[in-house]
Length: 146
Image (tube, rainbow, N blue to C red):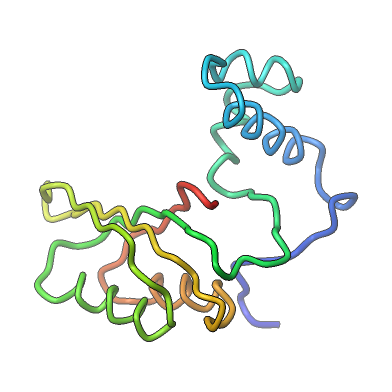
C-alpha cells in the first residue's frame, strides 16, 4: 500500500474524540461569542485534544468541487518557490482567489492562499500532495473550507 496522507473513514469508525472536535469546530463557527474553552466543555473534550486535532479533521462534503478552500503554507524563502506553488495550482485547474504573504523571518515564508476548486478539477488531494512534495515546502495546513 502506498503511503497515503488522506483517507475517507465512515463516521462510526472514528474515535469519539475526533467527532467531538468536529462538533466543537461547528459550535465555534456558528456562535462567534463562544470561546474554545466553552465549546470544548460543551462537547466534553479537553482544549488540548481540540488543538491537537482541529487542523486534521474536516467533515467530508460529497461535492468539494466548486468550493473555496483556504490554506497556509510554510515554506523556504527562495526565489521561484511561490511561483512553482501557483503554477501547480493553475495546472490543477483551481482558481486563485487571494494570496497573502508575511515578511519572511529566518528564511521561512508564510503564505495564505484561498483557492476555488472548479467543477472541472480532479481530486483535491492530488493538489495538496503535489504542493507538499515541492522542495522547500515545510507544511500545509487547512484553515477553512466553504
